[in-house]
Image 1 (tube, rainbow, N blue to C red):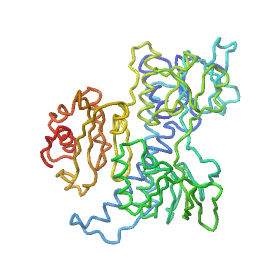
Image 2 (cartoon, rainbow, N blue to C red; image 1 turned 120 degrees about the horizontal axis):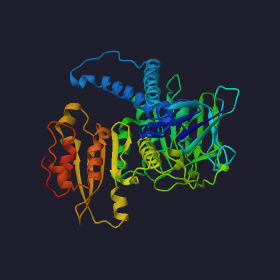
Image 3 (tube, rainbow, N blue to C red; image 1 turned 90 degrees about the vertical axis):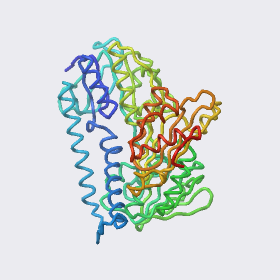
Image 4 (cartoon, rainbow, N blue to C red; image 1 turned 135 degrees about the vertical axis):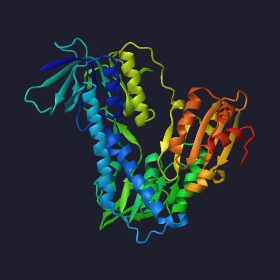
Length: 471
Protein backbone atom coordinates (compact mmCIF):
# COMPACT_ATOMS: atom_id res chain seq x y z
CA UNK A 1 0.00 0.00 0.00
CA UNK A 2 1.37 3.44 -0.92
CA UNK A 3 0.21 6.92 -0.02
CA UNK A 4 1.39 10.26 -1.37
CA UNK A 5 2.24 13.34 0.72
CA UNK A 6 3.73 16.77 0.18
CA UNK A 7 5.83 16.32 3.32
CA UNK A 8 6.73 13.30 5.43
CA UNK A 9 8.60 13.85 8.69
CA UNK A 10 10.75 11.00 9.93
CA UNK A 11 10.64 11.33 13.73
CA UNK A 12 8.01 12.86 15.98
CA UNK A 13 10.12 14.63 18.57
CA UNK A 14 10.00 18.38 19.21
CA UNK A 15 11.65 19.27 15.91
CA UNK A 16 9.62 16.72 13.96
CA UNK A 17 6.15 17.52 15.21
CA UNK A 18 6.76 21.28 15.03
CA UNK A 19 7.93 20.88 11.43
CA UNK A 20 4.81 18.85 10.66
CA UNK A 21 2.50 21.44 12.20
CA UNK A 22 4.20 24.24 10.28
CA UNK A 23 4.02 22.27 7.03
CA UNK A 24 0.31 21.60 7.59
CA UNK A 25 -0.32 25.28 8.33
CA UNK A 26 1.46 26.04 5.07
CA UNK A 27 -1.23 24.00 3.31
CA UNK A 28 0.90 20.92 2.69
CA UNK A 29 -0.43 17.38 3.07
CA UNK A 30 1.73 16.05 5.89
CA UNK A 31 2.54 12.85 7.75
CA UNK A 32 4.82 11.84 10.63
CA UNK A 33 6.48 8.47 11.14
CA UNK A 34 7.40 7.80 14.78
CA UNK A 35 8.71 4.49 16.13
CA UNK A 36 7.95 5.21 19.79
CA UNK A 37 5.87 8.10 21.13
CA UNK A 38 5.16 11.55 19.77
CA UNK A 39 7.18 14.12 21.66
CA UNK A 40 10.43 12.23 21.40
CA UNK A 41 13.35 12.47 23.79
CA UNK A 42 12.50 15.94 25.07
CA UNK A 43 9.04 14.98 26.25
CA UNK A 44 9.65 11.41 27.39
CA UNK A 45 13.32 11.10 28.33
CA UNK A 46 14.76 14.60 28.57
CA UNK A 47 13.51 18.14 29.06
CA UNK A 48 10.11 17.54 30.62
CA UNK A 49 10.65 14.60 33.00
CA UNK A 50 13.95 16.00 34.31
CA UNK A 51 12.40 19.43 34.88
CA UNK A 52 9.50 17.80 36.71
CA UNK A 53 12.03 16.11 39.01
CA UNK A 54 13.93 19.38 39.40
CA UNK A 55 10.71 21.13 40.43
CA UNK A 56 10.11 18.50 43.12
CA UNK A 57 13.69 19.00 44.32
CA UNK A 58 13.07 22.76 44.42
CA UNK A 59 9.93 22.32 46.52
CA UNK A 60 11.71 19.94 48.89
CA UNK A 61 14.56 22.40 49.28
CA UNK A 62 12.10 25.21 49.99
CA UNK A 63 10.21 23.17 52.57
CA UNK A 64 13.43 22.37 54.39
CA UNK A 65 14.21 26.06 54.77
CA UNK A 66 10.62 27.19 55.29
CA UNK A 67 11.40 28.25 58.86
CA UNK A 68 13.44 31.10 57.37
CA UNK A 69 10.13 32.44 56.02
CA UNK A 70 8.31 32.04 59.32
CA UNK A 71 6.59 28.83 58.26
CA UNK A 72 7.30 25.88 60.55
CA UNK A 73 7.02 22.52 58.78
CA UNK A 74 7.77 19.49 60.89
CA UNK A 75 8.65 16.00 59.72
CA UNK A 76 8.91 16.91 56.04
CA UNK A 77 9.64 13.72 54.13
CA UNK A 78 10.50 12.84 50.58
CA UNK A 79 7.99 10.56 48.84
CA UNK A 80 9.91 9.54 45.75
CA UNK A 81 7.12 7.29 44.51
CA UNK A 82 4.81 10.32 44.44
CA UNK A 83 7.50 12.39 42.74
CA UNK A 84 7.77 9.78 39.98
CA UNK A 85 3.98 9.60 39.72
CA UNK A 86 3.78 13.37 39.23
CA UNK A 87 6.57 13.32 36.65
CA UNK A 88 4.80 10.63 34.66
CA UNK A 89 1.49 12.51 34.87
CA UNK A 90 3.06 15.70 33.49
CA UNK A 91 4.61 13.76 30.61
CA UNK A 92 1.33 11.95 29.89
CA UNK A 93 -0.66 15.18 29.79
CA UNK A 94 1.77 16.82 27.38
CA UNK A 95 1.83 13.66 25.24
CA UNK A 96 -1.94 13.86 24.91
CA UNK A 97 -1.53 17.49 23.94
CA UNK A 98 0.84 16.65 21.09
CA UNK A 99 -1.51 13.92 19.86
CA UNK A 100 -4.33 16.46 19.89
CA UNK A 101 -2.24 18.89 17.85
CA UNK A 102 -1.74 16.21 15.20
CA UNK A 103 -5.48 15.66 14.93
CA UNK A 104 -6.14 19.40 14.85
CA UNK A 105 -3.62 19.85 12.04
CA UNK A 106 -4.99 16.83 10.13
CA UNK A 107 -1.51 15.32 10.18
CA UNK A 108 -1.37 11.57 9.60
CA UNK A 109 0.70 9.73 12.20
CA UNK A 110 2.24 6.36 11.42
CA UNK A 111 3.58 4.19 14.23
CA UNK A 112 6.64 2.23 13.21
CA UNK A 113 10.23 2.51 12.09
CA UNK A 114 10.63 4.54 8.93
CA UNK A 115 13.33 3.63 6.43
CA UNK A 116 14.31 5.68 3.36
CA UNK A 117 14.35 3.77 0.08
CA UNK A 118 16.38 4.55 -3.01
CA UNK A 119 14.96 5.39 -6.45
CA UNK A 120 12.33 2.89 -7.54
CA UNK A 121 9.26 2.44 -9.69
CA UNK A 122 7.42 4.52 -7.11
CA UNK A 123 9.80 7.49 -7.26
CA UNK A 124 12.67 8.44 -9.58
CA UNK A 125 14.60 9.83 -6.62
CA UNK A 126 15.40 8.58 -3.15
CA UNK A 127 12.92 9.45 -0.45
CA UNK A 128 10.14 6.89 -0.42
CA UNK A 129 9.64 5.79 3.18
CA UNK A 130 8.80 2.23 4.13
CA UNK A 131 7.29 1.64 7.55
CA UNK A 132 8.15 -1.42 9.60
CA UNK A 133 6.05 -2.53 12.55
CA UNK A 134 3.14 -0.35 11.49
CA UNK A 135 0.51 -2.87 12.57
CA UNK A 136 -0.30 -4.03 9.06
CA UNK A 137 0.48 -7.22 7.15
CA UNK A 138 1.11 -5.26 3.99
CA UNK A 139 4.20 -3.09 3.58
CA UNK A 140 3.23 0.55 3.99
CA UNK A 141 5.00 2.99 1.68
CA UNK A 142 4.83 6.77 1.95
CA UNK A 143 5.64 8.74 -1.18
CA UNK A 144 6.65 12.27 -0.16
CA UNK A 145 7.52 15.11 -2.47
CA UNK A 146 9.72 16.30 0.40
CA UNK A 147 11.14 14.47 3.40
CA UNK A 148 12.30 15.95 6.72
CA UNK A 149 14.59 13.73 8.82
CA UNK A 150 14.18 14.47 12.53
CA UNK A 151 15.42 11.29 14.16
CA UNK A 152 17.04 12.96 17.18
CA UNK A 153 19.80 11.53 19.33
CA UNK A 154 20.58 9.16 22.17
CA UNK A 155 22.93 9.34 25.17
CA UNK A 156 26.59 8.82 24.37
CA UNK A 157 28.28 5.97 26.23
CA UNK A 158 31.99 6.13 27.03
CA UNK A 159 34.12 3.32 25.54
CA UNK A 160 34.56 0.52 28.04
CA UNK A 161 31.38 1.30 29.98
CA UNK A 162 28.46 -1.12 29.83
CA UNK A 163 25.13 0.47 30.71
CA UNK A 164 23.23 -2.07 32.81
CA UNK A 165 20.62 0.20 34.41
CA UNK A 166 21.56 -1.10 37.85
CA UNK A 167 25.02 0.29 38.46
CA UNK A 168 25.86 2.23 35.29
CA UNK A 169 23.19 4.45 33.76
CA UNK A 170 22.55 7.18 31.25
CA UNK A 171 19.84 9.75 31.85
CA UNK A 172 17.37 7.39 30.15
CA UNK A 173 17.78 4.76 32.87
CA UNK A 174 18.15 7.32 35.68
CA UNK A 175 14.68 8.68 34.93
CA UNK A 176 13.21 5.26 35.64
CA UNK A 177 14.85 4.46 39.00
CA UNK A 178 12.29 3.62 41.65
CA UNK A 179 14.44 4.60 44.62
CA UNK A 180 17.04 7.30 45.12
CA UNK A 181 20.58 6.02 45.69
CA UNK A 182 22.50 7.11 48.75
CA UNK A 183 25.42 8.18 46.56
CA UNK A 184 26.19 8.67 42.88
CA UNK A 185 29.12 9.43 40.58
CA UNK A 186 28.29 11.66 37.62
CA UNK A 187 30.62 11.47 34.63
CA UNK A 188 30.33 14.75 32.75
CA UNK A 189 29.91 18.32 33.88
CA UNK A 190 27.88 19.69 30.99
CA UNK A 191 24.26 20.84 31.26
CA UNK A 192 22.84 17.36 31.90
CA UNK A 193 25.46 16.46 34.51
CA UNK A 194 25.09 19.75 36.36
CA UNK A 195 21.28 19.48 36.39
CA UNK A 196 21.38 15.94 37.79
CA UNK A 197 24.04 16.89 40.33
CA UNK A 198 21.99 19.83 41.58
CA UNK A 199 18.75 17.85 41.69
CA UNK A 200 20.13 14.79 43.44
CA UNK A 201 22.03 16.90 45.98
CA UNK A 202 18.77 18.69 46.81
CA UNK A 203 17.14 15.28 47.27
CA UNK A 204 19.84 14.41 49.81
CA UNK A 205 22.00 12.15 47.64
CA UNK A 206 25.76 12.30 48.09
CA UNK A 207 26.97 13.48 44.68
CA UNK A 208 30.41 13.47 43.05
CA UNK A 209 30.74 15.03 39.61
CA UNK A 210 33.77 14.35 37.41
CA UNK A 211 34.50 16.45 34.31
CA UNK A 212 37.40 15.91 31.93
CA UNK A 213 37.55 19.57 30.89
CA UNK A 214 39.23 22.15 33.13
CA UNK A 215 35.85 23.46 34.31
CA UNK A 216 32.16 22.62 34.58
CA UNK A 217 29.93 23.85 31.74
CA UNK A 218 32.87 24.49 29.41
CA UNK A 219 30.57 26.08 26.84
CA UNK A 220 29.39 28.79 29.23
CA UNK A 221 31.17 31.96 30.32
CA UNK A 222 34.01 31.13 32.72
CA UNK A 223 32.52 33.34 35.45
CA UNK A 224 29.31 31.28 35.27
CA UNK A 225 31.33 28.07 35.54
CA UNK A 226 33.17 29.34 38.61
CA UNK A 227 29.94 30.37 40.30
CA UNK A 228 28.05 27.13 39.69
CA UNK A 229 31.07 25.17 40.90
CA UNK A 230 31.13 27.22 44.11
CA UNK A 231 27.40 26.80 44.66
CA UNK A 232 27.40 23.05 43.95
CA UNK A 233 30.19 22.63 46.48
CA UNK A 234 28.11 24.69 48.90
CA UNK A 235 25.36 22.06 48.46
CA UNK A 236 27.88 19.36 49.35
CA UNK A 237 28.63 18.18 45.82
CA UNK A 238 32.22 17.00 45.32
CA UNK A 239 33.54 18.47 42.06
CA UNK A 240 36.58 17.18 40.18
CA UNK A 241 37.55 18.87 36.92
CA UNK A 242 40.40 18.02 34.58
CA UNK A 243 39.78 14.42 35.57
CA UNK A 244 39.08 11.42 33.31
CA UNK A 245 37.92 7.95 34.29
CA UNK A 246 39.99 4.85 33.60
CA UNK A 247 37.34 2.56 32.12
CA UNK A 248 39.42 -0.59 32.67
CA UNK A 249 39.25 -0.03 36.43
CA UNK A 250 35.44 -0.11 36.56
CA UNK A 251 34.06 -2.66 39.03
CA UNK A 252 30.45 -3.26 39.98
CA UNK A 253 28.85 -5.53 42.53
CA UNK A 254 27.70 -5.79 46.14
CA UNK A 255 25.65 -2.63 45.64
CA UNK A 256 28.63 -0.44 44.70
CA UNK A 257 30.39 1.05 41.70
CA UNK A 258 34.15 1.44 42.01
CA UNK A 259 36.30 3.20 39.47
CA UNK A 260 39.67 4.89 39.20
CA UNK A 261 40.84 7.90 37.21
CA UNK A 262 43.76 8.44 34.88
CA UNK A 263 45.50 10.51 37.57
CA UNK A 264 45.22 7.81 40.25
CA UNK A 265 42.10 8.82 42.18
CA UNK A 266 39.59 6.17 43.23
CA UNK A 267 35.84 6.69 43.63
CA UNK A 268 33.03 4.55 45.01
CA UNK A 269 29.26 5.11 44.99
CA UNK A 270 25.96 3.28 44.62
CA UNK A 271 25.46 4.38 41.01
CA UNK A 272 27.37 5.85 38.07
CA UNK A 273 25.57 8.26 35.73
CA UNK A 274 27.07 8.88 32.30
CA UNK A 275 26.25 12.38 31.03
CA UNK A 276 28.88 12.85 28.35
CA UNK A 277 26.85 14.16 25.44
CA UNK A 278 24.60 12.62 22.82
CA UNK A 279 24.97 10.70 19.55
CA UNK A 280 22.90 11.45 16.45
CA UNK A 281 20.44 8.76 15.38
CA UNK A 282 21.52 8.22 11.78
CA UNK A 283 21.74 4.43 11.63
CA UNK A 284 19.15 2.07 10.17
CA UNK A 285 17.04 4.77 8.53
CA UNK A 286 18.17 4.09 4.97
CA UNK A 287 20.67 6.90 4.47
CA UNK A 288 22.83 4.45 2.53
CA UNK A 289 20.11 4.47 -0.14
CA UNK A 290 20.63 8.18 -0.73
CA UNK A 291 23.43 10.60 -1.57
CA UNK A 292 23.11 12.18 1.89
CA UNK A 293 26.48 12.83 3.50
CA UNK A 294 27.44 12.06 7.09
CA UNK A 295 30.17 14.22 8.64
CA UNK A 296 31.50 13.66 12.17
CA UNK A 297 28.58 11.39 12.91
CA UNK A 298 25.84 13.84 11.93
CA UNK A 299 23.88 14.54 8.75
CA UNK A 300 25.43 17.30 6.66
CA UNK A 301 22.99 20.07 5.66
CA UNK A 302 23.11 23.58 4.24
CA UNK A 303 21.89 26.74 5.98
CA UNK A 304 18.24 25.91 5.24
CA UNK A 305 18.66 22.24 6.31
CA UNK A 306 18.71 20.65 2.87
CA UNK A 307 20.87 17.56 2.53
CA UNK A 308 22.74 16.68 -0.64
CA UNK A 309 19.38 15.34 -1.85
CA UNK A 310 17.68 18.73 -2.22
CA UNK A 311 14.17 17.39 -1.51
CA UNK A 312 15.34 15.75 1.74
CA UNK A 313 15.90 17.97 4.76
CA UNK A 314 17.31 17.15 8.21
CA UNK A 315 16.82 19.01 11.47
CA UNK A 316 17.45 18.71 15.20
CA UNK A 317 19.96 16.59 17.05
CA UNK A 318 20.69 14.39 14.03
CA UNK A 319 22.50 17.31 12.36
CA UNK A 320 24.57 18.22 15.45
CA UNK A 321 25.13 21.84 16.43
CA UNK A 322 23.18 23.09 19.42
CA UNK A 323 21.23 20.01 20.47
CA UNK A 324 18.36 21.86 22.10
CA UNK A 325 14.62 21.31 21.71
CA UNK A 326 13.90 24.94 20.86
CA UNK A 327 16.64 24.88 18.22
CA UNK A 328 15.15 21.76 16.63
CA UNK A 329 11.73 23.44 16.62
CA UNK A 330 13.05 26.55 14.86
CA UNK A 331 14.97 24.42 12.36
CA UNK A 332 11.74 22.54 11.65
CA UNK A 333 9.91 25.79 10.99
CA UNK A 334 12.65 27.00 8.64
CA UNK A 335 12.64 23.70 6.71
CA UNK A 336 8.84 23.62 6.43
CA UNK A 337 8.72 27.22 5.23
CA UNK A 338 11.47 26.57 2.69
CA UNK A 339 9.53 23.60 1.33
CA UNK A 340 6.47 25.84 1.03
CA UNK A 341 8.47 28.28 -1.06
CA UNK A 342 8.67 31.00 1.57
CA UNK A 343 11.66 33.25 2.15
CA UNK A 344 13.57 32.14 5.25
CA UNK A 345 16.38 33.56 7.35
CA UNK A 346 19.14 31.16 8.43
CA UNK A 347 19.41 30.50 12.15
CA UNK A 348 22.22 32.34 13.95
CA UNK A 349 23.51 30.26 16.86
CA UNK A 350 24.47 33.41 18.77
CA UNK A 351 20.78 34.32 18.92
CA UNK A 352 19.84 31.05 20.63
CA UNK A 353 19.21 31.14 24.41
CA UNK A 354 20.79 28.24 26.31
CA UNK A 355 19.45 27.10 29.68
CA UNK A 356 20.61 24.90 32.55
CA UNK A 357 17.87 24.11 35.05
CA UNK A 358 20.07 23.61 38.08
CA UNK A 359 19.69 25.46 41.36
CA UNK A 360 20.42 28.23 40.79
CA UNK A 361 19.38 28.31 37.15
CA UNK A 362 21.75 29.33 34.37
CA UNK A 363 20.85 30.97 31.07
CA UNK A 364 22.83 32.70 28.35
CA UNK A 365 22.59 34.11 24.86
CA UNK A 366 25.32 35.37 22.56
CA UNK A 367 29.07 35.35 23.05
CA UNK A 368 30.94 34.61 26.26
CA UNK A 369 33.63 37.06 27.31
CA UNK A 370 36.29 34.56 26.24
CA UNK A 371 34.73 33.90 22.84
CA UNK A 372 34.25 37.62 22.17
CA UNK A 373 37.93 38.26 22.87
CA UNK A 374 38.90 35.33 20.63
CA UNK A 375 36.93 36.97 17.83
CA UNK A 376 38.91 40.17 18.30
CA UNK A 377 36.38 42.31 20.13
CA UNK A 378 37.49 44.93 22.62
CA UNK A 379 34.93 44.13 25.29
CA UNK A 380 33.40 45.98 28.18
CA UNK A 381 31.57 44.15 30.95
CA UNK A 382 28.57 44.95 33.12
CA UNK A 383 27.85 42.75 36.11
CA UNK A 384 25.23 42.94 38.81
CA UNK A 385 24.64 40.62 41.77
CA UNK A 386 21.23 39.32 42.85
CA UNK A 387 22.27 40.14 46.42
CA UNK A 388 21.38 43.75 45.63
CA UNK A 389 17.97 42.92 44.11
CA UNK A 390 15.01 43.34 46.45
CA UNK A 391 12.88 40.61 44.87
CA UNK A 392 15.76 38.13 45.23
CA UNK A 393 15.95 38.94 48.94
CA UNK A 394 12.18 38.48 49.23
CA UNK A 395 12.50 35.11 47.51
CA UNK A 396 15.43 34.12 49.69
CA UNK A 397 17.46 33.35 46.55
CA UNK A 398 20.34 35.81 46.31
CA UNK A 399 23.12 33.69 44.82
CA UNK A 400 24.31 34.58 41.34
CA UNK A 401 24.53 37.54 39.01
CA UNK A 402 23.82 38.94 35.55
CA UNK A 403 26.81 39.55 33.28
CA UNK A 404 26.62 41.54 30.05
CA UNK A 405 29.35 41.50 27.40
CA UNK A 406 29.42 44.45 24.99
CA UNK A 407 31.64 45.78 22.22
CA UNK A 408 33.59 48.73 23.62
CA UNK A 409 33.93 50.30 20.16
CA UNK A 410 30.37 50.02 18.82
CA UNK A 411 28.40 49.48 22.04
CA UNK A 412 26.78 46.40 20.47
CA UNK A 413 25.39 43.82 22.87
CA UNK A 414 27.47 40.67 22.38
CA UNK A 415 26.25 38.36 25.13
CA UNK A 416 24.18 38.08 28.29
CA UNK A 417 24.87 35.47 30.98
CA UNK A 418 22.68 34.87 34.02
CA UNK A 419 23.09 32.59 37.01
CA UNK A 420 20.42 33.02 39.63
CA UNK A 421 16.72 32.61 40.43
CA UNK A 422 14.45 32.18 37.39
CA UNK A 423 17.34 32.81 35.00
CA UNK A 424 15.76 30.62 32.34
CA UNK A 425 12.61 32.74 32.36
CA UNK A 426 14.49 36.03 32.23
CA UNK A 427 16.83 35.22 29.35
CA UNK A 428 14.16 35.93 26.71
CA UNK A 429 14.53 39.67 27.31
CA UNK A 430 18.21 39.34 26.47
CA UNK A 431 17.37 37.18 23.46
CA UNK A 432 15.02 39.84 22.13
CA UNK A 433 17.67 42.47 22.69
CA UNK A 434 20.06 40.39 20.57
CA UNK A 435 17.46 39.96 17.81
CA UNK A 436 16.84 43.72 17.76
CA UNK A 437 20.58 44.45 17.84
CA UNK A 438 20.14 46.52 20.98
CA UNK A 439 22.93 48.28 22.83
CA UNK A 440 23.25 47.91 26.62
CA UNK A 441 21.98 51.46 27.12
CA UNK A 442 18.80 50.53 25.21
CA UNK A 443 18.29 47.53 27.50
CA UNK A 444 18.76 49.88 30.45
CA UNK A 445 16.22 52.32 28.98
CA UNK A 446 13.60 49.57 29.18
CA UNK A 447 11.96 50.27 32.55
CA UNK A 448 12.23 47.16 34.70
CA UNK A 449 9.40 47.10 37.26
CA UNK A 450 10.24 47.09 40.94
CA UNK A 451 10.48 44.78 42.73
CA UNK A 452 11.33 42.13 40.15
CA UNK A 453 14.25 39.85 39.49
CA UNK A 454 14.57 41.43 36.03
CA UNK A 455 15.94 44.57 37.63
CA UNK A 456 19.28 42.76 37.69
CA UNK A 457 19.33 42.85 33.88
CA UNK A 458 18.66 46.59 33.83
CA UNK A 459 21.35 47.25 36.43
CA UNK A 460 23.88 45.06 34.61
CA UNK A 461 23.15 46.97 31.42
CA UNK A 462 23.84 50.23 33.26
CA UNK A 463 26.97 48.72 34.78
CA UNK A 464 28.48 48.25 31.31
CA UNK A 465 29.13 52.01 31.39
CA UNK A 466 29.61 52.27 35.15
CA UNK A 467 26.14 53.76 35.68
CA UNK A 468 24.54 51.10 37.90
CA UNK A 469 22.42 52.56 40.73
CA UNK A 470 22.29 49.96 43.48
CA UNK A 471 25.93 48.92 43.70
